[in-house]
Length: 254
Ligand SMILES: Nc1ncnc2c1ncn2[C@@H]1O[C@H](COP(=O)(O)OP(=O)(O)O)[C@@H](O)[C@H]1O
Ligand SMILES: [Mg+2]
Image (cartoon, rainbow, N blue to C red; front, side):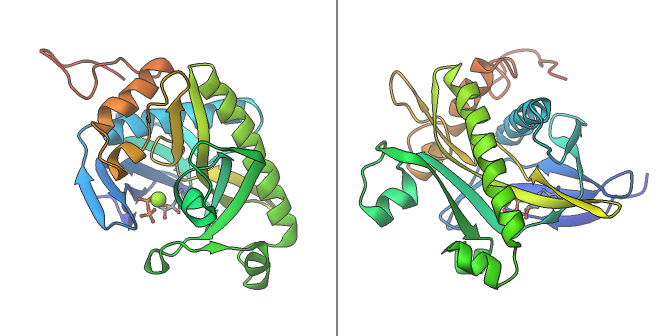
């Protein structure tokens, strides 16, 4: 069998050329990085969990009419996606203060926002993905004003959807980031949700106990990251509870 072409190897995923034009295969690795890749580890099973969780959220978004790049899951670690022109922004939505926002603004983690706040980081690892104002986005041509309006509207729809899904399983959606891409259909261009939606890219707190169930477990050494992600997946009914620490015989999860 011919070796497939690797398009890009990132920190958490690898992209390969897909079987059809304008498709890619997205492979979810077990690598975890934080603080602009200063902290690194391999977390057994993380890729499997994120592949499933991202599929679950993307399919749900499609069902409420939010377009995404997701086409289908191929196996435990890979999904087929539409190749898009990535907008070089991390679009962040915050419902409660946390992380860099708390640090920057001196507002305690967990403080509710007056309303969901949408902000943008410019995707550039060498700069540490700096926060940028809308002015930069327009002036440097990363997106047009019309696209920016659409991006904010999409991000808020994703926020309402994810907040509700999480609330249903006793989890608070503190914040998250998404990436968006352009898809061309003939003369028309539309924006779709791309990359991934997973506990790597969200802050998720148990509503009752405040337990963190996201990548902060890794950033702050709070315990076993795969256990936290498994908890999210199990509550959502996305996969059996013993995927990352199988005991005895192998479990069929496909
Ligand atoms: N549908 C898509 N088409 C093209 N590129 C994509 C798509 N979805 C995600 N990407 C890009 O693929 C890469 C995913 O790998 P990741 O490990 O997250 O990389 P990074 O280390 O750059 O964050 C990101 O650069 C992301 O922008
Ligand atoms: Mg990434």
